Length: 268
Ligand code: GLP
Image (cartoon, rainbow, N blue to C red; front, side, top):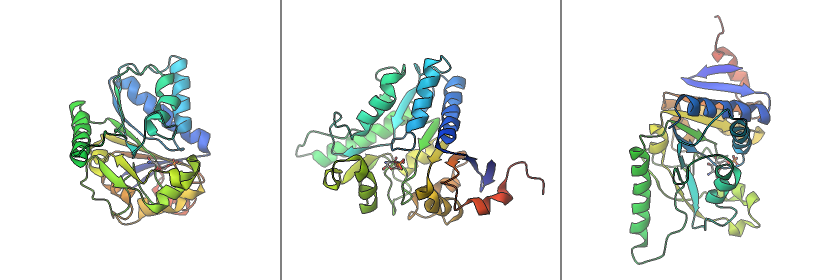
């Protein structure tokens, strides 16, 4: 089913597999109509199958990634690229090493910098460089997003300044707890991260947000139908003019009763 709520297109798919395929097709279409697309990419468990589907499409010759440029949303801080929990490792392992993206065309915020007396300044410079690199590439054509249980996008946690660019963030206790499932123990989860800011996300020409599972249902309701507030960072997307949400039925549980009146094609 397809809905239009406050200008946001919402697709509700049967399950995670269908949700992932729908998202993969949208990304593939973007790359096909513009081979030099600039993609904003996300990590987390949600887009994993979308990446798998895109790899299959590449293997079947349906899509060619050789000219795309990509910018990932975020990275833990500090973390080594070789650490299996780093987003650099995730992207290499789950996507980049399996497609024909050109070396040097993908960007991930730097998770580790050499400690020096000018440490904070150097970090700020890296963040500014990341923002500038996105601008130099012509801006992001399509930004893929997941959503945290607390409404974060990238690692923009509640109370975020909407005007922020790439910056260092202190992770919420809730985020550390949610992401500890990927680490041996909660103590190993980095307490900080480098994340694109809300400003970067809002500047993307198109936004594609994926959500799966009952656990995301409450926050999606707040994001879509609630107030636009820094308490729910994803709520800012109500103001973006080209947002598509791809949800599976479980993620849509809380919003489904409210969606009927927004069905696209409904004759009133
Ligand atoms: C992580 C990432 C986000 C991601 C979110 C949800 O912390 N920084 O980019 O969207 O949390 O993750 P998941 O898809 O595993 O639920």
